Length: 338
Ligand SMILES: Nc1ncnc2c1ncn2[C@@H]1O[C@H](COP(=O)(O)OP(=O)(O)OP(=O)(O)O)[C@@H](O)[C@H]1O
Ligand SMILES: [Mg+2]
Image 1 (spheres, rainbow, N blue to C red):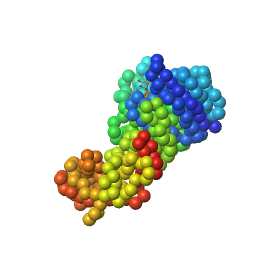
Image 2: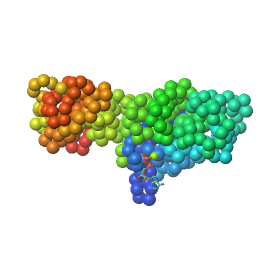
Image 3: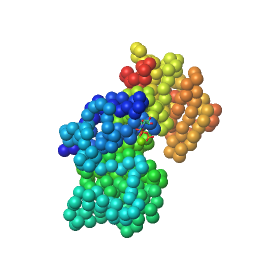
Image 4: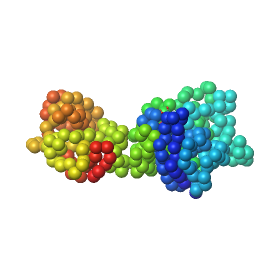
């Protein structure tokens, strides 16, 4: 059993609070994604779990055992980090087998695991090459294969696909999830790419300014963002936030007591023939299956995402209302109320 428990973890770098007070529970074999903008503390948290950085306060437990003070090699974890280091003076074969050989695993097991990890990552044909003879994307796959080969209890991955081209990234993304389910490890995966987080995670921990602001399954994070930050960070285009009371009314909505802003996803605004809120299209982007329209009402940006037909022309005025049950209300501090 390799659940991970982070309890009240703080990290200060010379007066700078990188992590405020992190609580996070990852179940055995769960795939947890840490998602957040640059500088929010994702890598710092991963390094603390790995034992590469010391927490200022709090506890890290793996499989119920307190890890504080233990070096990385005593935590039965494997890591693939942003600046994945593949040993340049070793062949790919030696790179992938490195962790197992360090653990003095029998050679037939090492061979088996190298072959399996290489096949999973589609690098079997590169095993005899040196790392210096590979592209960045290939090196990244070697780093993932090397981590998988040791069959760790816990796999920590920090932006492991960031150096792959868009197509390969998509392909690897869909493979990675099934692959990790098969090898039954508990995984924490860092990304700042929200589509990657949505498609990979069993649960997503959304980080902002050194804190976890929401920790839920992807559909919940999408449908009920806990804060306006989450609603704005997840979704492309992001959620609309509308404070104008007359705009609320035109959309057929009324704010609950103390609610300041209405959150509504661009695809949750429906075109209607008469009535509703009149919006004039300022920018229209045709995306093939859908079109996105930007408009301003009472000085507030409103984005609409709708079917590609009928086509909306720039400057055309259309009428919209909110889909039933899709409105979210946020207080002055940006917290979800209803
Ligand atoms: N060794 C360090 N000394 C001082 N400050 C640090 C150190 N490492 C990280 N920080 C600061 O802590 C904050 C969190 O950094 P971290 O690397 O965890 O962010 P991140 O979420 O991984 O960002 P990115 O998506 O850019 O990788 C940042 O403000 C960073 O400048
Ligand atoms: Mg980072």
